Image (cartoon, rainbow, N blue to C red; front, side):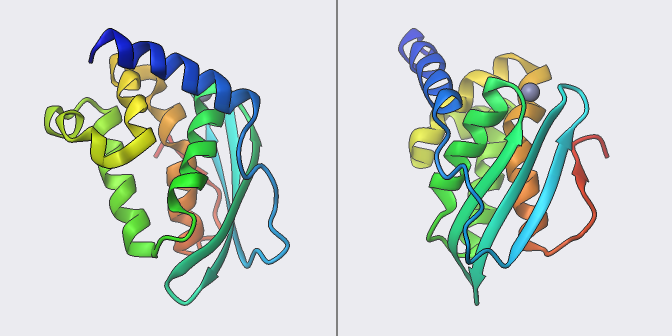
Length: 152
Ligand code: ZN
């Protein structure tokens, strides 16, 4: 990772954690799931408006560290308007990126803005902060009613 990306990482995380996007419950929401990361105390609820195979709208609410908030904010931006399969593929790529998969880091530009989360791979304890919103999204898509915990 270059220093430029490191600096961008910090700026983006700060900016999104201060002003998270889609921080709301959409009126049309027809699915929701709760996530909890006991290691850090991050909590997140993801709301979805799913129609057929498409994520028409998405929002989240919760409390937690800057990384968990920024990740949730950027996750909502990334999957809005996507199909379930596209969202699942993004999560897979994102997960590989934050866990330090060299190939995923090399092709991180495919992830767009999410690429800044490559910085998380240097701090293994924060990986669960970064993936909480994604796990919660997956649970909402699968329509699970049990709260999801990163400690399973
Ligand atoms: Zn956290």
